[in-house]
Length: 190
Image (cartoon, rainbow, N blue to C red; front, top):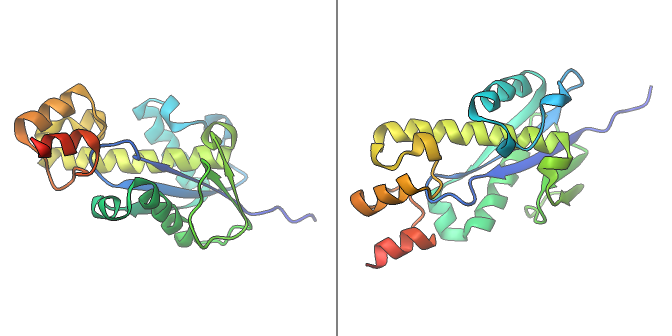
């Protein structure tokens, strides 16, 4: 019997947010996954994303990697994203033989990888990683929104929407805001 290569898909979410961590997932799909469900997480509504994430968790090996707001401020968003990817890859319960990474950058210190621009649209394991990471991060931002009610994080998940920007202008920033990001930096500079 021919050996099937163990392939992990890796993606991150939250790079463009004004608040919260950047989150990555690494996913190795099992054969019983419904591939028709897997596509770029941004093209799936929240409710369906949550359901599909549960299916992926049942039908794959996966792990989550996080880089904190402090790490984003210390290293910059790209390096923090790569750090979260590396953490997700390192936490996988099985060592992949090939790692497929969304985008054109890869974390330092990994072997046997390939970067793929728009990989979340082209490669099912990367789509799965994008869904797992997005649901994890969205649920985290919803949880934070219960404590920080003035920024509509339960709806915008930390992105710079009108409601989020109004909250920032009215109530200032929180420890979860990325102080080096332009809109936040502008508010701090006033």
